[in-house]
Length: 524
Image (cartoon, rainbow, N blue to C red; front, side, top):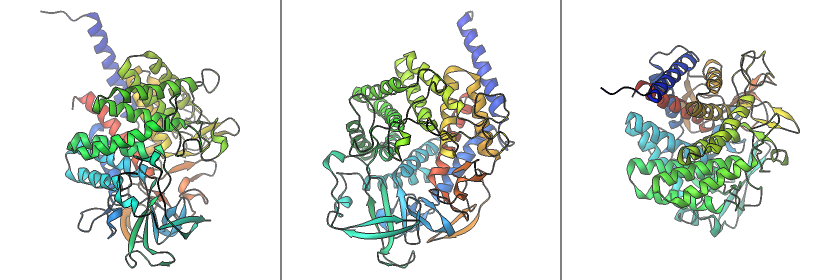
């Protein structure tokens, strides 16, 4: 009989500690589980996705979503609401007659639908993802006949305070260099300005939003790659690879990814660089094309060259892009660091080069420094230790000129938690797991989560939801209010307002990550 070697015994011992830590730390971090933790996290992921499905624009007869007669909009995800349940029509401006569909929302929706289908085999999720994919390909520059319809006529929306005005322009032509990109999204109207009616009365029609940026391209391309793997439909693969070619054209010789087209308008953005690296790694796995691997590693090395090597912000990365203001260029965003962690861990997984693991570890120490920990014996911020609603949330950004900008967005917190969870599985450093536990407590045990819904009548659509949504978009401890309650914010007003995918997609991704982790532990 063979004897067990010391290395095997050590591996088993470490695995036992790993399982013990997961169960003790995560298992006690949220409300009492009705089922096993694995089943509970899947239930929460499905709850988030099905909540989003209410807002997918669907053909008449579809058993979910908002049935509009505007076929160009089918598959898109209505964005968010603001004051008195009006549609958010343009960056926080309101309208009863115009809504905005964002491309990154649809990309997340595709990927999450595919992941849930793979786990549950519920066809509804796959159908929702495929419908969203059809919408996405409708706005792909250079490969869409629908986009060509706007060469001679376009209604340009303009934000005026919290309202929208419109003007006619001769038409739009997309540059050849942008071929393969998905535009920023789509505007959907009920009637043509200035002769507009309520939803369901006027003639509904759609037109593309014009900004072209990698942040809207990478989520869709990632979703289409995953959809291709499940369906084997090469149309999805072809569209994704065309989008990836655009992303590569947006990469600087040093490896950074520019914020938008044209490339030099705002400069490179760190978060876009990390997201592009993750997309390129995945494309390499799907296709075996080594060009994608080389480009992904170039992006990872660029990020390494920019990481802060010492001092209080060791491990952080500068934002670099001036989109949104010059103050952002040298500021350190939690979300940027979280995205680079995921990219570097992929690089380490593929190459085995420990420089990527070390960089990810250092970025992780910066990320946990951005979490409000209150009186917990953890490594983090203690700006609002007295406020229970703040404890566990991650702050948005640290700016050398301003200090902490203490907005706790749900997307920031969930992306940070996902990155720390991945870091823990690679390093077994239990401090990372403790911070995930605290983030889960913030996510599940504060009013950020509002599972009880009632029938709400919105312009053209009836949904079941808390008036603030399934998840609020964030919390601002300075004001003691949730983000959607603060006048002047993107979605906020004293009366109500909520995001759709921007608030629910992050939790859905995190719950799926936890589901996969527990599946490994339970051997499922």
